[in-house]
Length: 404
Image 1 (cartoon, rainbow, N blue to C red):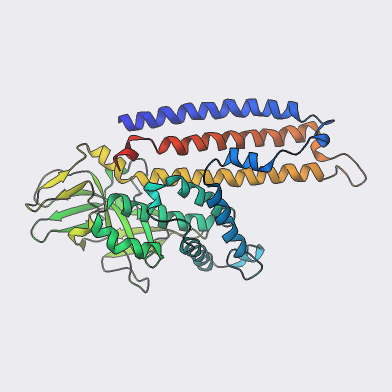
Image 2 (cartoon, helix red, strand yellow):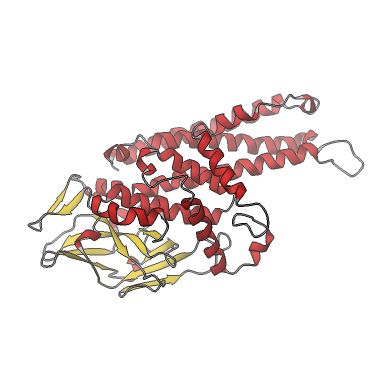
């Protein structure tokens, strides 16, 4: 493993052990502080102090983003109004709604593409706030803004930024992120089978799926995307060997949603949950793309047709190229913890009010076994929140972040 992987594993192992220890300690403390005969007389804790502890950054942004969502959830028919009627929607309608919600949130101007490097913690906060409304919308937003736009911004150069960033910011060109393959999972992406062969004669690339195991798999929102960041093993025509995994920005479908010539996209169908997040398989049949398709901030072919790169090792090139995937995991994980916080606190509030039996004055929370179960869950959630905050900050200081 590279030094980067070793540092990641060491940091996450320590944080994981700390989270487990913290959960055990918190459970004991909470149980001691909330005995059955005292919990009714507890004084309320200042909500602001708890909020600052759980979400220590971007308080004003979180308030502004929540205010935007509240304004757009005024009642039935509002874009962010959620009720049981959504369950009756078709898969296509669910996906369209998720995209529309993501587009509306993006066009509100609360987060900019440049924040991926200038203020990355705001991206994490945006995922957390959006999680309050629709998990499907989180994925649509994260795929377009974090994985797709973030890769273009961090791996591309001025020619990519000037042309695509305004379109990305307006959600005029929805994008997706194609890394995972049947035979190459996310963590083994350093050895993808999809190929990109550079032809020095016309300075173009041929993107190809050479075998069934190379098909791009579980690609979110590929059926709705017009552009895609595709990861492929780069080589040069007539030269043995390859240069490792690189990222390419290429068109996937036209304005009508029809895949371009040489591209095939197949929907993977319904899932038990998150049907609004469409997953697809994608194939490429020697699709010719221009020289500018290579996101070439760190690697390129010079005017003589020779390969150049500031990053000498293949695995380190991949770590930089796929860095947005790691950021995405932090964002989605943080949003998931926020949902767990809401569920845990909702259950506790209910238990403090609900009576145990129709004619009983005893509240559910006064029963030791029920209280211990709820507080154990709360302790785990708090431990995950604190360790998750630490992961967010630690991830931003890793060597791959300093490179870009």
